[in-house]
Amino acid sequence: MWFMILADDAPGNAALRTAQRPAHLAYLQALIDDHRLLLAGPRPLEPGKPLSETPIIGSLIIADFDSLEAAQQWAAGDPYAKAGLFEQVRIEAFVKALPA
Image (cartoon, rainbow, N blue to C red; front, side):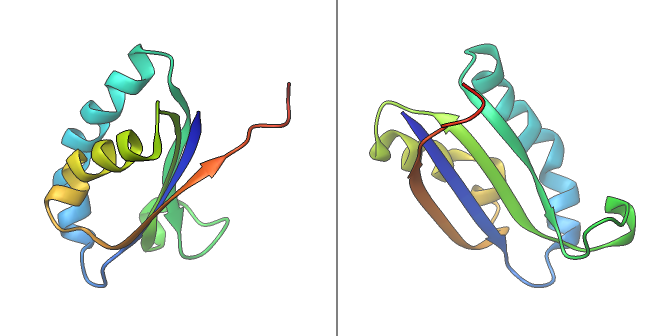
């Protein structure tokens, strides 16, 4: 089942995001290796600007998990979450309708 993990960064945590990024990407790699990651990426404050020129306000991950509880457990283990980067995290079911 697909789940959307929508995380909002806590204000003033840009340095924490930068410091934890390598560990976060390594954590995502397991989903990639298992062919369970649909997409993942940062959410910039200002669309169209290079990421180096606009604050990041959070992250979006859509991945395949066996259950909501499994998605919650995975999200809690994310190095970003463990380091306290996020102010809020929402996890919801997601249906990939298109492309088929």
